[in-house]
Length: 511
Image (cartoon, rainbow, N blue to C red):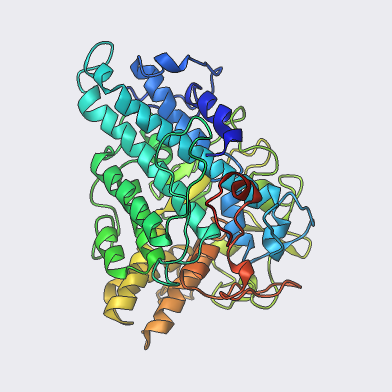
């Protein structure tokens, strides 16, 4: 960890973070309260202080420069579905036109710093939990704190660490498919750092980082609560990690690694073999009947597996907000519009004119079409999405097509379920019965997988999935407008390692 971040890390350990409830008492902390600081020596002395630290871990991960907005934006605007309208260097212009370098402060440097700051905060917390374990078996801690609550908290921390490392890999390292994970990955920092002593750390391979991610997610699955209960459950089951959160994220990780049999094993825990597709245990995740309801306030349907919340006093920060990027004035700043040109999503015939994701989640300003998935203007309180249930369904469909062939009935049913939710039967003249659209029988695996990839592209528009899907397949990043495509062999395909890391870590190597 860079020495320049040390004071921030130490201070963050002692800060009461806002916007989340707690496991042990389920108190609703969604309404911000004044920040309270404690000396480091006493932060593990009471259940409330330990809970505040757990809340703080979420705050580090959901900062606007990381998973509170910018990460999702970067992974969409790198590809061909958005056009930059403002030419603003602060709001991802270099990401959009592939002109980033090691000194790019607003994206390359800031996202790396935010992610590793969150990772070190998590490591500091985990080390503190171990060092103070003897306290948790006596008053003022309740009887089950040492045996249950501590494991819950450690599991939340490790899930957030896994999510952070996974997110970094998607931008700063070669895809797993390129060399089966043998290429340089990231410095794998797993110990708490409070000074610059251990700044020098060589890069682990991509496979080694993924292995640690999977270890963290397995621990999380084994030790997270099945679900939250009580009056705050609808919020906590979206904004706090539970067992199904870990399983869902593992399906994403395995899909990114191309381990399709493992995708199926994990997804089967959440997705039944036949409709209705409702998670059988834990939080009963399911497709909401209305795609528009998923993104309407408070954005807390059972479809949302993990999202990061904000309040007026605890927002994503200036020029980080999703609505600021994607909505036109006055609700947003119209930084990016949807691409209606060749190759853009609006020109794709698979994105039907009657699709509710087109008619309800986009908006026009003159002849320009904007994404309207994040409807809340200032103070920008839309939750930042991380993963939703249809992603698990489509990941399972893709994995089954790849392993069982293009006519696999479960894969076809899952693909149709997601598509038909936003493409209901068209009205017809009685006595004819409306018939919902169904994909035809695919004749090749490639044809079937392409249909899934298009469905993912449409369904998760603006949620940060597009670039991940391209890179996990080592596919070319398409061009758009005057911006040329980027082939997998191009040095621009992977982000550069930040100059700040190269300056403070003598064992770090460039991309």
